[in-house]
Length: 455
Image (cartoon, rainbow, N blue to C red):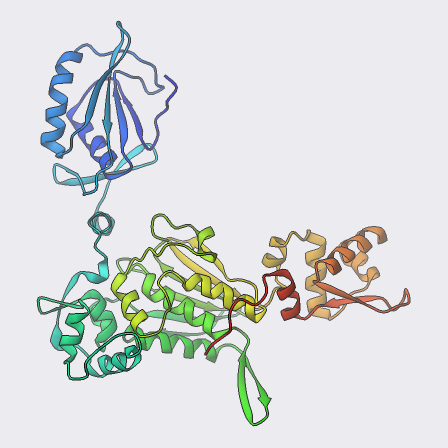
């Protein structure tokens, strides 16, 4: 036998009723096979009571787990084994009132919020659609009025309808109780009911040196505006005057920042005790929200068209009607397109620390981005040198990287071909290299204009 124990395979020498939890875990995961009469290394050793087990096990499994297994006789004449095959279940399966899943080659019991997430996922229920203990009297009518005005181009709402009627039509009130989504969206202080439903925005000089920090509270509409205000407070802006108009030009594309902000609020896992965190550094902004990507989505899929898999369907629906997001599932694509059009590096998407993060870099001349472009350590060091000093010569390149003139020439020529550096001067003593403008360099390295910025 060539199989080894894994996520979907388990070996046992004989049968014990406690192994029902393994079958339960298979049903709650991706299915699996339990072999009886087999050693841990997959060697057949056979069973003595095969006929009795073949008769008893199907009924025992059905009675205890409410699933129908495939129980088959395998092996040889002198080493008979039993193969119990379990298909994945569409509904949660329990054994003695407990729920189990497979993790690697082990069986784990689900508890607390993990269990709640599992049951909601299997039943197709999102947390935000669940009724809370908050009554409809807590609705903030002023926020509902603002929403109605924002949603008038996408949603037909009669101004004669009451706030309660509007939220009922949106399935935000169930049996007189606000759903969790309604609490977050349409009450004055959702933090009274969900303590972690706020955002921390900090200005950092280094990972340990904090210059400023603020907590953004209120309902989710207020949090969006509060976050943008806090970020603008901590980044630079310049003004361009065109005829009689004065236009604000921020050092980051604010529309992409807003997309990341909304993404963090509507896709976060509100069952997690952590809050949304935003850290502003000299050269980048880091967004993090609790909750990894939904099952079936990967980080690599986020910069191209991908299916919409929503953790909080009602939150996404309301933000869509309010015109704060476009089509569901397009937020990450829009962030990347906006950054490319502005001449910025595409944002980085990561799963880290039990959650999801988005990183915006101020320019393409940072170590991580240059490394992704395939530059060697010498070239990266030289680009950062030019970023600080304004220019570099072949002799300076040799000095800071400790290489020969030939190597320096070759490295610098590659940087020119990549349109990172531009060569100036004619005579040998006058030749030097400077950075290409950020926007021009980035547009050369990425796709042409994808969409126009709006704000």
